[in-house]
Length: 222
Image: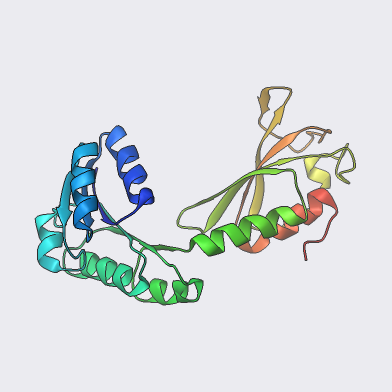
């Protein structure tokens, strides 16, 4: 995979290093001359110094052949410009833009950024989801945020203990993909009972996620 990363700071370094470790073809564009020299010494990647929203620099970075462009600067307007140029001028199939101000996330989406993401929104979401049900050990958005995969442990006081799947009314848009019980993975059926300590693998659309947690925990999220 050919990836272009635009930005500076530790997140760019560690992300590029991870991509290189996966044998991606990585090009980093940074506006900081000193950081460009540092990255050139530390990464087995192409490093360019300059403005990542400059179409000439993006073309020099291989945007016409890139499969993804990540814009990770501290300025939303720069990230949006990078993604739009990559998408419209060079037809890059995936553009991923950091949204520093969460109020701009919808603007990014409407203007064609494939995957806008806000660290603020992600952290707030994790806190909110766990506030009412602490046994959520992982929460992973997939399909560009349209589906969530999570792992939920059933506590001793969960109202669903002893009930079978066919006795539960899962909301539309949610399903139980698996149960981890005593180290074994169980593919659930209609007559499979839920037991204390079970770790449930849930697949759901974001709109019904909270209702599933309420069903399993008996707690209402604020």
